[in-house]
Image (cartoon, rainbow, N blue to C red; front, side, top):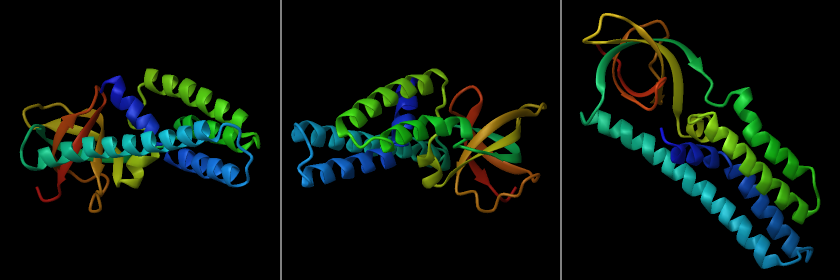
Length: 199
């Protein structure tokens, strides 16, 4: 996955922070505490809109991939054996969202808060992209996606390989059981999967 979609993943997780920032700016404007209100109001709207657009783009990307697999467009037939759920929003990844939020929440000065928020968002965003954390966002969880660690056997191949599989709403999945799936690679270690429960 290219860095554009990794940035999209990162920014999609900023919706709660952007929304709280937007409310804070409006509240400060209501209390007449804002210097240069148009700048802050514009920044808060841009931050919120960019975060929402990122979430929509991310959802559409993976949802479209799943729909394409469903109509037989792309992917490889495989047998999968799920072994465990992997956390899409690990404690390591949490710092990319919690630290900017904590810095934002700790200050009453909106100018200082805005600068801290912009700097931390940029610094953590660059780190997020360089570490290729393309699946670590709370948005995927909210959209019903789940990440599994699986053993995969391609129908044409004899050997099992271990891979992470992203799928949506796997309500019937039982760990340790075997399922037929159609997989399409997202990156070297992860694939998106359409799972068929009756094999």
